[in-house]
Image 1: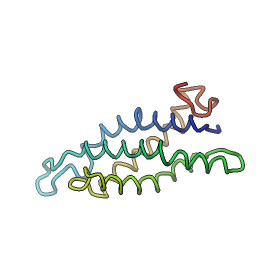
Image 2: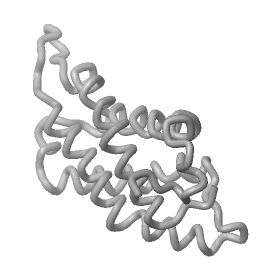
Image 3: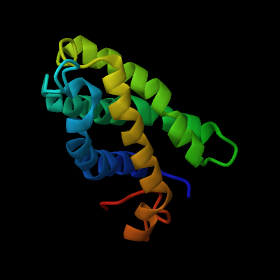
Image 4: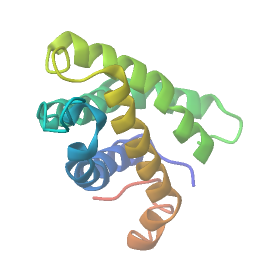
Length: 151
């Protein structure tokens, strides 16, 4: 499949809203920053941090990263975007998302870098696995329509 620019945007939006968001709602209570080391009690609510991190990934992805990735994609010989590239996208996106998260505030008091990584890495892997299989089953025309889901 050769994703179009609109297809890339729609796929990213779908993955963050319908795959990463439910996963985040489930996994956030189990993240390392949620428990106090001394007595095991709940130390802080990480939902604002994890949901803000997802929002940052979505907004930066739609506005900054997808245009860059699309430009790199059209510069490739076969104009495709292999699955491993999707996995490697995690590195620059997570670094920038962490700095933006620290800059805007909700992570400054509660989340540590390890908490952020324990959230982002599994979330990205879940989204990657969803693109490798279930999205092709649920949206049969997805790969024939350049990654477009909605229209």
